Image (cartoon, rainbow, N blue to C red; front, side, top):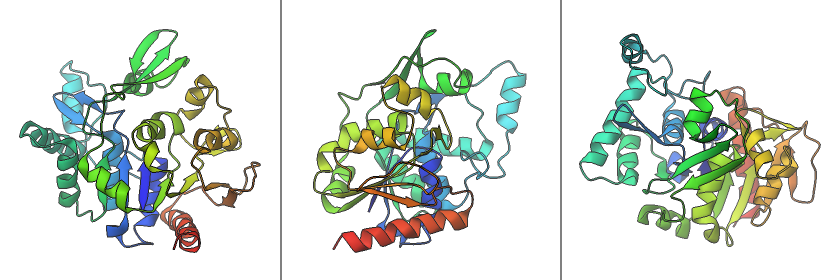
Amino acid sequence: MIILSGGTGTPKLLRGLRHVVPEEDINVIANTAEDIWVSGHLVCPDIDSVIYALSGVIDDEKWWGIKGDTFITSTYLRRSGFAEKMQIGDRDRATHIMRSELLGSGKTLTQATLELTKKFGVRAKVLPMTDDAVSTIITTPQGKMHFQDFWILNKGKPGVLDVKFEGIEKARISKELLNVLKTEKTVIIGPSNPITSIEPILHLIRKYLDKKFVIAVSPIVGRRPVSGPAAKFMKARGYEVSSRGVYDCYKDFLDLFIVDRKDGFSGATVIKADTMMVDERRSGALARFIVDILKSHVA
């Protein structure tokens, strides 16, 4: 199976999925359009959240970084007048250093990611959506800014006029990703932001989805995203901020759509379940529910 992932929502699902199916059967395509260089090292927030979730070390209060991490380096830099764009934990920083050294030695981002997964004992295959540089640029009344400047430095407060993915037209998928897309029959779109997390992945792989069984999990309950700035981005793109709006993002290739039990959206391809993965037990329950659906629909 293939899982499309951004941050927060989908890593929660992966936390449960790793206990429901053999980890070797999991292939994750992670968004890289929010990647950013910080202090000379490449930070890949969505890739790292996937690796940390699958290895069981993710900080499951913030849903980024490593549980119990320290911030000695970050604090020292700030006190020295060198403020980084992101607050990076010390063990988390080690991941970025290793990645950047691998890239510097001539490895692709895909190769570097596969090496990192091994170091964390992850048996699933975690693949970047592309080895090429893609950046999510948010147009606001104050001007254009990188996603991390919008979300971290400006705390997601500016209005959003548009969202673009710089470099996406020239980006290509890796041979490793192509092989997965040719061999796997099922795709799960996790409950991540449909615009900034999933759309850039879809831009690169959409043509491969026609012959696959695709399930998506809504990251919205009622009119509110479970987490993150999805509402502003969906409005900017002309989508209703609701599960219906998320469905409209995916309807061209979607086979089944899972919404929360409390959500009012319904339809022939809509299934209701408990999507509020507040702990590992409920993450596992949703993962098991999805896997059972796949077993009943795909030979």
